[in-house]
Length: 392
Image (cartoon, rainbow, N blue to C red):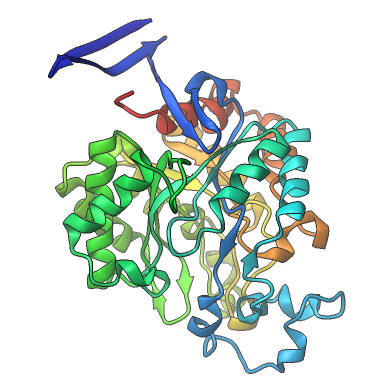
């Protein structure tokens, strides 16, 4: 191991430590700091307790009208909810049951999972004390995220903040604690749904906070969001803004990149099937070639947006795309997740829970001939590199 340090104002600050060429360091979990080497199998994009009910209003005109009686979680209503109407269901769009979450995260632990990156920042995050309780009860490392979700989800206290105040707000969650507790965030997450002025301010503030604290930063971008559509060109703009604030590309993670590997419009897929069924990795490679990391985080989605004319890539598409990206040498820039943000994704309601990467994606990658090194990179090595602070 090689360790580099400097003495600043009488204080020794470890800038980086290397073991076989990989950065090592401390990671802030909701139960305290641990060594990055102890993270093991890590899911890099999940929600454990989250409130996304504002999407009910955002999406109300994106789907054909439906009687509200079909929006409660019942066996009969799954027919509608799994077509995308879950977005109009307040019950579906909030995860708040601690006991159920302990059980669901426990399934992840039992299958061999060790660590979950919880990417719900301020504005959508559930009670951080309950998230800590879930982590302890399930025996899974949980890293909380500082930052802000899209501006329609912002806490009122942030509404009139300039960049400097938002930087302090984010850094306080990292250095002091979240919501008046001593539970500290170990990651930065900024979400943009429209790239309006507020979201750009948050994006820049997140970049500064990530740079100053040494943490990695995940940016929510992508896909279809009802009134707006942020594509990979918008992702490139977001990356440029972050880099202009002095952040390092190797510390940035672009979310939801598996949204862009094929045509999403259902009518086009049906009318021009031969062409639209083919995967297109060029948009994703364009992002990777900037030096940033990406996360394929929709594995195991049991719902789609069929009622709105949208079809997601399948898990088969995603695994094929991973294999191709491995062949092209990108495995050190990719991490994986399931993005469980809807109640009916729980195993309790017939979904895949937090297990799809563990019990399906990894076995299929192995059966498809992927190298162990590449699989370890996307599930263990890259998360360990990204989740340790540059400064410890």
